[in-house]
Length: 114
Image (tube, rainbow, N blue to C red; front, side, top):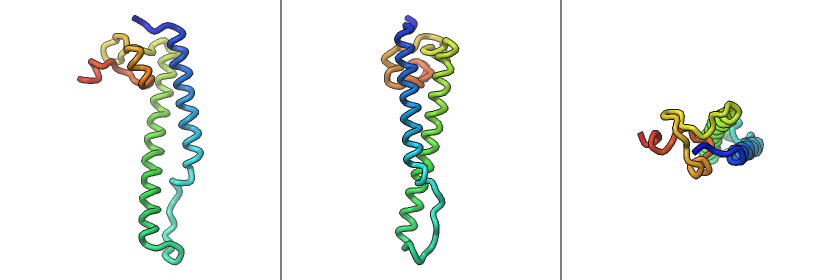
């Protein structure tokens, strides 16, 4: 059972919305990844440690965001190529309910389970 054109268009819109949301979040969080200044006169040791931890968390979030952007771009490319909704491993259809949870998914449940 292949996806209908309307279903594919719905997933395309969902992916575009996801990409826009990621872009908005990236703009809002951009300053959190900045280098932490280590001026002991203006910031105490614990405050510096807290700032370093926040910076590390912001960098990890940025890395996850970039990974998701890559997955979204790949899903949009599969839509453009007419390959969206098919398992990369076995070639079978990926159920629409599975795609609704994560339209960037590339494998069916059986193949993902191993």
